[in-house]
Image (cartoon, rainbow, N blue to C red; front, top):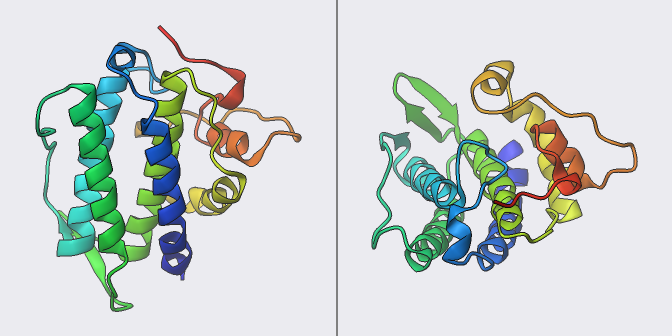
Length: 197
């Protein structure tokens, strides 16, 4: 099952992302991110909301939340503390035993639990990379993690999702490392570009 693989990937994805957020400073919150429409504060708010939604799906079996305000405002301390707490909550939720038939309701549709966890892995790891880039830190996604996510990514990134949530894939060298291959698949330039400003 995909869940078995994705659930094993969530701890290293969260560990990597927690390392990435350790570079955030108050000054870096206004910097551009690889998600062109967001600065770093916007990206952290987005990821923090995503963690709540993923946790809700894992624990309750349905997703109903809209955006969730970060407690304590938009300071570096509150955004990073919120990220850390919510990432650990998600990790604990995914560690709970689940029936093989467990699924997550979203409006009038059902999402398999293994897809929910795989989405969480990709969301946490790739946005961890985005956050590090915005802090002028080159921190590739660990090779084993990036390779495993790349195996899941074609299932998670449909043509419809590509239209709304992802840029077109970019060409990548045959010598590129696994992190840059994954990032190129998701329309990011990987180590070839620095994001500051």
